[in-house]
Length: 391
View: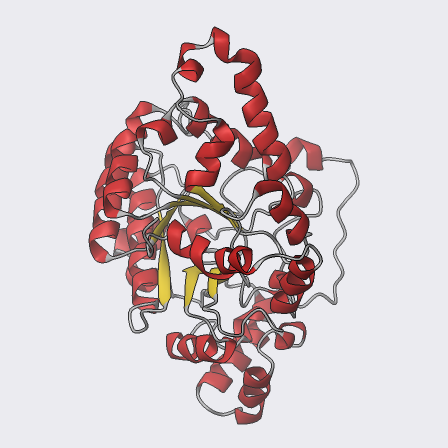
């Protein structure tokens, strides 16, 4: 029997695709004039034909293409560029896509917009960019309560971050995406951030770390003296490099270690955390290593002695993780328990695969996942993470 039968399915990872001028339209003139090109420029000529075809379809001039996409939402990702995908740039289409997929709720991230301001040296651009992106995400999701907007927050200046966070929470963002690396010489667990965690805890809005939250393979490790060659036939611009994938979780593990060992999750027991599109194969070993660090060194460290739970128990209480559809989710489930993992599609990014439902089903069926475990994976862990369900 299909796992979707008789069950609410929530999607912990999806994206909108930014069109040219989209972010600019929500920013002040000063911020617009100082935005960076980001990971890659939306003005690249290679994107012209894809955006032109997307515009043509959205005008209603390509009904056969639209019908084909709607008939095979996940499969079409192998045929069309993501800027063309159904529901990628248009919020009315996204609502219809959610209907077709059969979701109860979908968390929606930006794709590349944060890269246009997050590393800027001008804090007016950094926080003006945060404000603009948050307004843009809220607008995209405003007309459908199933579409939950992800806000973005820089931690470069804790005081300014508090102002931006308050505005985002007041306006209704459903989670806040932050970076995982240490900022301005402060650990992720620095006490200057405690007011931010308190605001989030009170609002029942979680912290989220997503791919791109931190450094992957450091730049020096990419210098081999040989130019990297890409397949010119590739139709999607891929920003995750092969060397990144095995190590994308390293900065996340450092971040999590600080948040637990330095007592942040002890001080803020209702603060929920999501790790999205960062994989989960690493999680069983990380839980063991976190516990081992305390058991071996806790007697020498007063902060560790003050923890009321084992590190792995903080994770089970407060952290939720979206595995990749290519991972052995059943094996991960058996090693971390029922309370952590969440279903996700990464729609409309091609990395989400052409059959995320089937990929997860096959892996979970291989370990005879119980109905309770399936309910937690597809529905309730997501609801716990986003404050949609008590307990």
